[in-house]
Image 1 (tube, rainbow, N blue to C red):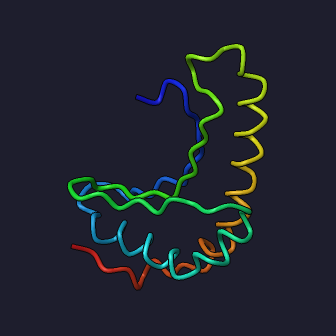
Image 2 (image 1 turned 90 degrees about the vertical axis):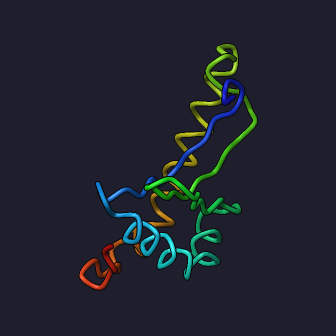
Length: 105
């Protein structure tokens, strides 16, 4: 399925039985969506799927994937840049999360 795409993501999974906590983290970060996406420089996908424990913030690119070795230098440059931007965009908001306030199931 992802043979010809690549991407970066911030994966949220605090462990077993943490669905509510993972969702709370995603929602808290999403309150700052405009600032995060502005800092990242592009729209991001905010993923919360029914039946999955984890949540994530991601960006996918259709510039090629693992089945496109001739594009690997371009893909590597793209994803390294995107991961650095994602980390810089999310870090201040993650550092301000108060995990003691998050609801646990």
